[in-house]
Image 1 (tube, helix red, strand yellow):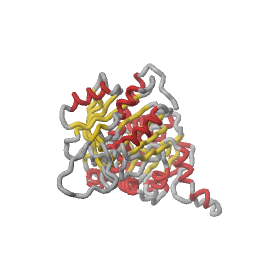
Image 2: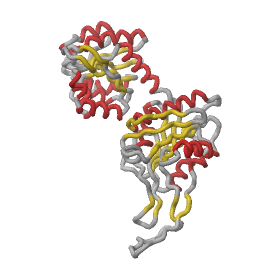
Image 3: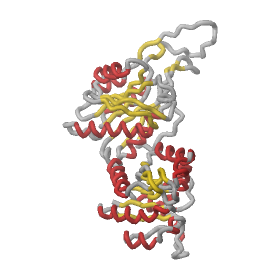
Image 4: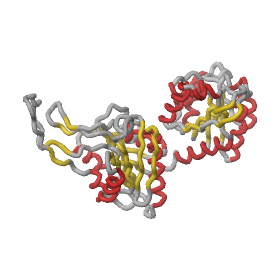
Length: 406
């Protein structure tokens, strides 16, 4: 296993040497990347002697003026060769560069270039830590799937007391190893995710729809991808950019979503139905735009129950997770849906809560199985996606039958 250890310019930079040593004790190969400011606190030779690896200190190598091509793409080579990127300590400035995508040095460019898990351990003055800009940058990074190892409280080098002290070395290493393990816990699985609303046409310009933005389903798809799964995303109409899944299928109506999901369900080992599928569709679609002329009656008929159809037709070893958006009798309605549709788990959302659920970046809810209820407090949808997949991994571990493979 190989990780890149990013060291930025703070007084806690000397602790990175101990982190490197702790990782080596776990047979991890460590390549250190230092910012210019970090070199004011610790010399690169220290890390070179500890790791036996080249320490990267600048964007372009100065060793050989004729080797500019190799040095100019070195960040890509490192990005593709590592199993994780750990930045410890991470200063407020480095967090800002990561959050805003500023590739101003080798480390920030490496952060943009790598698809490996990223863990950052911030260390800074307490006022810098509490500043709204720093907190906003941290939230942005969390929503992108970066693991934050929260700093401790205590006496700081600046003489102040409060949050901002680099977390304990062992805690940082444990967080990194857990994140690496998590990045492979869905390896070998084929995860099928549905997301977004469906639109049921009334005439050529109007439709029946709902308030789903697709953000929760897209977050689940991206999180599954980061955890090693092969991912297929079937999405209703949204304004979102699809994650880099292996297959993306755009649909509009319930019937189109049903067709796409049934065609792929047999190849999926885990299916997570986050889409908000319309329950009704017009009996007839007007061939021309309906003109306004007083009141109008619209005859509706139920749409296909895709989730129930999948639940009744799944093979041994397949996991099926549903969602329930409720406004009353929450747990009772969710448990009924869990049983009637033969699900392994259901994610319950109270969509009557202001600022959560449909259209929001944040969510909360409960994950209900036949035997357990896991409460998920308010958090970003990216974080909630991770919690949902944590429960899926637990369900898989409890299964006695072999998983289905494509």
